[in-house]
Image 1 (cartoon, rainbow, N blue to C red):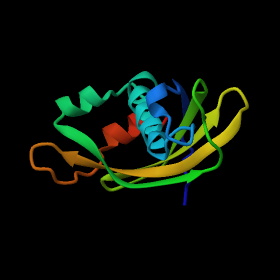
Image 2: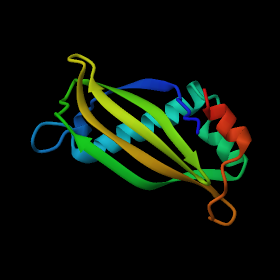
Image 3: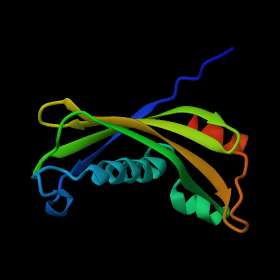
Length: 139
C-alpha cells in the first residue's frame, strides 16, 4: 500500500476588529473562516485550479465535516499563519488538515481537519473526484 504525501501551503491572515469576541480574542468561529479563506487562496495560487474554475466545470466543494482543536488565543493585531495539507482523497471526498499559528510567537493557536465533498452543481449530488483533479492537487 502506498501512502501519498501532499505538499503543505501557508497563507497569512491579519486578525481584524470584527474577529474579536467579548473575551478580547478571536471568536472560535473565525478559525474556520481563516481555514476556508486560506484554502480558497491556495486553490488558485498553489494548486492552480481556482474555485471559479470548478464552478465553470459545474462542480463545487461543500463541507461535510469539520474538526477544530483550540490551543491558545489569537488577539487583535496578530497575524494568523494558516498551513494546510491534503491528507487523502476517497471517492467524492477530500480530507484536508490545517494548523493555525501566531506569526509573532510561532505557537500553535488551533489545528484540525475538514472533509469536503465534490458535488455536481446541476443536481447537487456528490461526484467522484476525477484523476485530472487529483493530479493537480497531488503536488
